[in-house]
Each structure stands twice: as structure tokens, then as C-alpha cells.
Length: 275
Image (cartoon, rainbow, N blue to C red; front, side):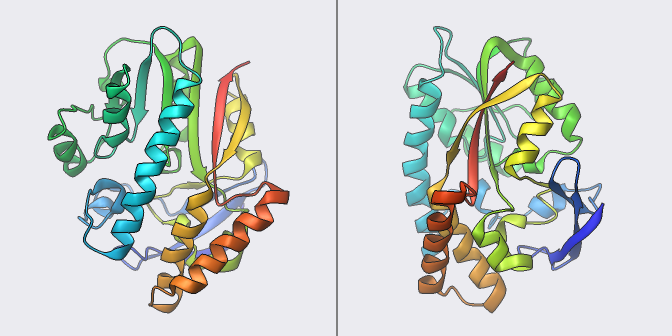
């Protein structure tokens, strides 16, 4: 594997990491991958594990999250069966599971963060620490919203997920796309690299190839339009030390504009089913 670029952990430690390109799978791999990843999540400010509305960025995130929750519910409803059993991996503070439960889903969630689980518990949602702790059960829909890139032992984890899926079940995976315009524009400052929390950095090709090895097929790909704006906002801060809202909005707009033809959006949702 050849070095693609070098970047830093801009969220917490400032440590440097390499991104190596795997030409077979067409993906990037973070090196080194720390054995103790827990400390890199140990922050109240880690946005996916907080319900904060303190800063303007927090407020934007929460507003977009509310819209996305409705979109996610609509998506899983279109792939549900009579069972309506949902497993959300990397459930964070449990907001998506809470929405699904209100619409008749039997919900299960996995979340390793103690802080996030504590917040979910206040919403009467109890989360399991890992996939092995789940009850013996098959799921109608399994979702991973910006989670696959965090999972160590990728093939082993995917194998477990496939094993938890019902015969006609659907796996829904959302991940950043390192071939998007905003990734190319911001380079080492692109916030969605988020090293070392993101161990893997996917392209459209890599998602197809990885899941094919497990007897799964990508049947549909959907864009996440808002991600380009939010990621650009964070990337501007990493690059310049300032928010630069106008520049970020322009970068996000250009990313979506280019992606309208190339289909290389900042983040993509993959609908995956058995062959």
C-alpha cells in the first residue's frame, strides 16, 4: 500500500497519522491504528455522542440531525417486513432508535461509549456494548450510520453483521466518501478523515467489493446532501482556525454540484442485501 497523505487528529490529540491506499479494495487505511481507541472518544465535545446545543455548530448539527432522523425512518420503513426488528450499530445517544420505537419497531442498539449509553438510558433506551452481547435474534434491518469506518477487524465485524441479518433482511450503511470534491479540496484538513477514530476511508468501489466477499450486494446508493456542508464547516476550522461559514457553504454547494454528475457525494448511504 502506498501513502495517500498524512493528516492529524484535529479533534483531540493533534497526533499525526498516515492514510495508505489499498489498490485492491480502492480504500484508505489509517496507520497506525491505536490499540486503545477509547481515549480518542473521551470528550464531551465528540459530536455524535452529545445532545449539546451550546454552539452554533452544535445547533446546526442538531437541526440537520432532526431532518435526517425523519429521512432514516422513511428509509427503513421502505425495507421493513412484518417483523419490524431493527438493530442500530453505533447507536450513540439513541435518538434514531427512539424515533423508530415510536413508529412500531422492536429496537436493539449497540454502543460502546459509556457516556452515550448514559444519555440513551435517560430516554429509556438500553444499549448493548458490542455485537456479541446481543440476544440470539435475527434482524429485519441493521443500520450503521457513519459507524463502519470506526470498526476494528472490519471483515470479522461484517461477517457478524451478516450473520445477524434475516434471510430477506437489509443492511443500511452510511459512510464518508474520500473521492468527493470536498475531500479533494480540503485534503489533509478534510474533517471526515477524523483519524484515528476513522480506521477505514471508503470509496463507492470499496463498499461494493468488501460486501461482495460476504455474499452481499449493494442494491442502491443514496446521497447525504447535508454532509458536504457540515464537513466543510469543520474542515474550514481545521484548515484556518476559523469557522468561515461562507467559504464552507460554497465548498459544500460545489461538492454537491459536482456530485450531481459524478455521484461522488461527500457521504453515501448503501442499501445492501444478500445475493
